[in-house]
Length: 411
Image (tube, rainbow, N blue to C red; front, side, top):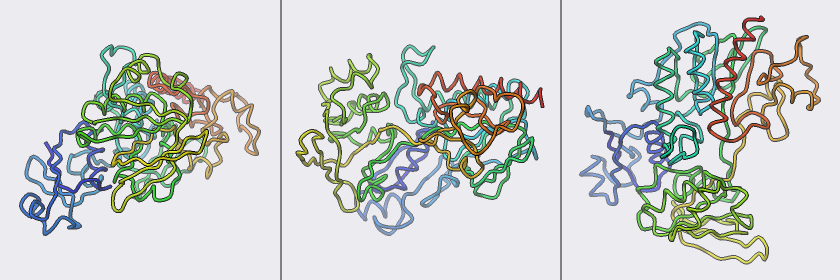
């Protein structure tokens, strides 16, 4: 059990809670409300002490305002690559990347999985995934990711967490990716499974409130902190619906804000029925959030009717944004890999429909999940025209490994 001492609604505190929750590490959040509590409980001078938040581990180790890398080091999770060259390097530890790691390692490939944050991707923040095959009672996204990690490690995959890539090179027959700490990953084949990041609202002050009232994704780590308060969830997809249902366990009221006229076309039927029947949830259709107000933390939002322009203010400290994603493929532009207009990686037969300056360099056609760079594959949400479901991401991860074998055997 990790004890975290900190002030309410701070970005650093939220980052630590989110990381530990998604990593399935038990923790207890000890909220400090006065200088006296800061001194007696956290052993710091006052509530605004820059050493907050404080993490105290089970062995008594105390970390002051730690980075995620420092926490991974303390947990024994921060590792260095063991090989000069791998058969397969996978980037992104969401369902597609974890699946590829399991299948790659189990089939004898020297496999390394690199993740800039922690396990699970967007799915890892979900409070419950109920439509994934084999889990009729549902499973938390972080729990599914943790099980997949255990499988991958059992088969011999290496997992490098809290490691972001800075640039990539693809000389013939291999890929070289440089990580932010100077580490270099070299592999004969690569699978990009970096997924998507939730889009923001594009409002003034939004960045200032991140982690201090504004959150992106389902925010399962925060559910126990919003007892008796009004919560707003922006978005009409399954992630937003699951978040709304999860928050009803502790919130006074949950408001789901969507621009459309209904949720019928965006929410799975089983989830739609629950949302509409919950006495704690109110769906605000044809509505958008247009302003954020507050000092150090979010205190008020402004809602606007998209039909009439009429505005109204609402007091809240909790705004969760689940409005679709943007692919994390900035690196692909630098190395000349073809992307669509939304930034998603184009693969296989779809490359024929995207005329570009870069010609496919081989006589054979690209394999189904292969990008315009031979030996570099894409799987999951980051791929053009992919189906945004956990099951399809897991399937693409497995399929990508099968195609990696085909590529290696033909090289």
